[in-house]
Image (cartoon, rainbow, N blue to C red; front, side, top):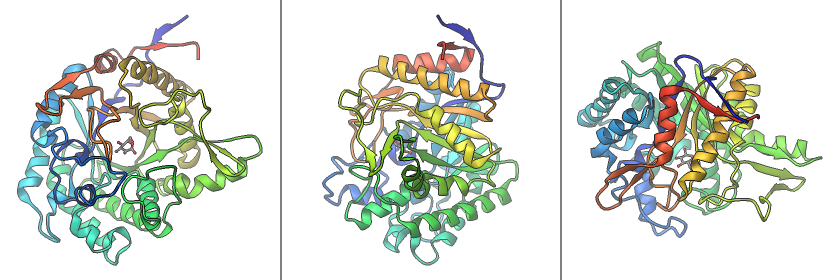
Length: 399
Ligand code: BGC
């Protein structure tokens, strides 16, 4: 038996997320563009034109607003804004300001991510996050984004998934360039502390621009689940991959929770999902309950800091599985709210089928994009989820 109710409080953010490099196309001055053309074997294909959202962001926003969403998370591209060290492009800053204004004009509250995995190639060449002066360079970039974020942007994310940045740095040291090809390599500790310092510096800059902005960062949550007897191993495994980044968010205005699946841990570390488990196009176990665990674990570490689900979704070619996944996930969010967690919003990953860090194959989008014409088509899941944005009435299971 199901009944209908409205668990989401007034002002609850209801949206979808994207990231510049994954949708804009031709991000030629970024480190990722260079990696894509470096011949690295597990980067199957380059991003090239992506969804051409650099030119078609207005179509994306028209669709999202028309579907019923009230919030849109997108990132701005450091590699475009600062094409050479210390040279800030007024034209690119104006471009991103047009996006902020365009969102507001359509009734979409913009959530702006300042850094989503890509850095300018020059920053990478000088040694990336752990090089001397890297934190100051990031802080200078953040200050320079004032024309984009100082007015009308209620939420700013400094750095997306710092834990994945540290994991990628760890993988790179082991010779694996880009998104890790398998498993969750050991994060590079020097990178961990560098991005934490960069975050702290960025928070200061954002608060100086406008103290009204809610500033925070978004952490990838892998929902580590201990098999009986493996509780200590699990805690030790999780701390450098997740908790250290959540602890660093304790003085922030909010923290973003990003979750897709779970990772079970036995005495010797992660164990694969059961043979017969349903898997998504990323090969992750289909596990809609993940977001509930992720929210509760995050709250346990950050205390009263408000939570926003900034990414949650599924890569599938079968859109009915997406609706099923999101229904399960949203019921988890609703139960967590009812249990008293301070959850301010839910933004699905992703607005569009996009470049999934090495391949276009895993389709996370609510909206399909034709790779040749770039025509957008809202999938039934987008119509359904956007509709919930209007009604806020979630079909509830018994739970
Ligand atoms: C990232 C996204 C990515 C998604 C699905 C997160 O790691 O923030 O950029 O596309 O998960 O893999």
